[in-house]
Length: 143
Image 1 (cartoon, rainbow, N blue to C red):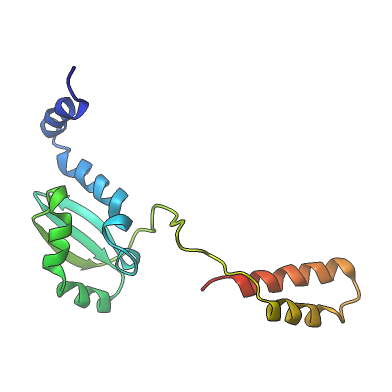
Image 2: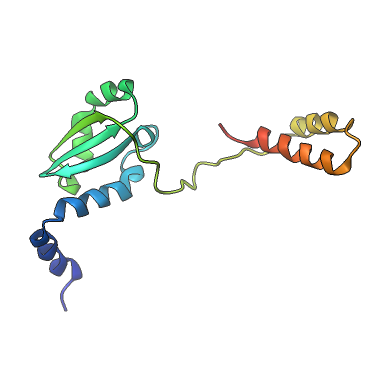
């Protein structure tokens, strides 16, 4: 028996898609390699002969990342990246849903009191429930 990667590596190299496969692996792991806010403001665009082109969403981030170029290369060395370049451009949305970051916060007792005080003057029961849900959603949404 032989490992599948020992059979696939020469095939990928012969087809000339080695850089494309590496780029896809980098994209899949981007949020694990770089935590927020870096992963939120950047995304890998292309990989050619060991040079990774990284899209950055603002000039401020573009300039800031220049100071960390060597650290970025060091983190990506395992993917065959020897150098990086940055360009101002469209950043791809994050691929994986980050389950560790909550999208909402719990309602406090004072939040509940505020909601009840706000909806008490509404006579229509259905409308009152809809307003209550809207206020709850607005308060608990984590910005």
